[in-house]
Length: 195
Image 1 (cartoon, rainbow, N blue to C red):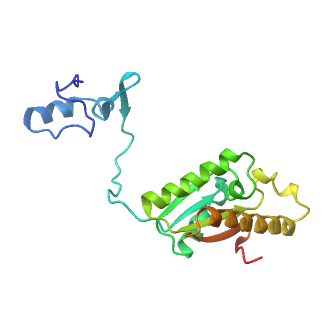
Image 2 (image 1 turned 90 degrees about the vertical axis):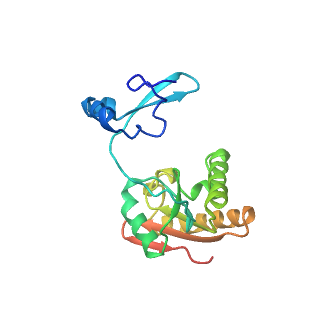
Image 3 (image 1 turned 135 degrees about the horizontal axis):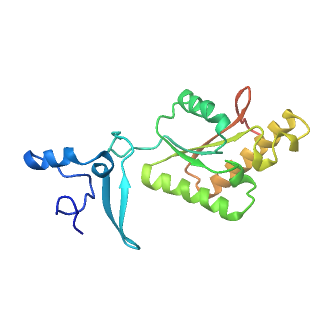
């Protein structure tokens, strides 16, 4: 494929470094065109992408401190990040799915459980993960919310038992993994202790 503007291969890895006259031509292009990449799409041919902003991400591969199975409820994002910092997780592989650890303990569909297991397996394979952190939170819609329980204490106990079921299931599948489990409510974070 040939780039319309510069009669050269498409910008698969960004625009070419320009010198002299070519640089002057690039400056004359408007922002939208100069920040657009032409890429080859096997199914439909040419496709354009527009760069939204510049950001340099690290290129080095990393070893994951833990795969974290967690719900995507935004109300708990801040405490989620603080907990990971508190327990020393710098490079997590987050596995976010409705219900979090519920998908391993009592999934609505077996395919949800298989999805989470595959994500954990890939985290182990690609990033050397040796730990899984299971998390559940209060008022989770996957459980019917707080109203599905007689009291916050009953909800907390249910979630503690669920995390233990999830941990047992994971240990059967991946005996080499270390597993930690936490319950997050609107007042803090609780470690799920032994049964």
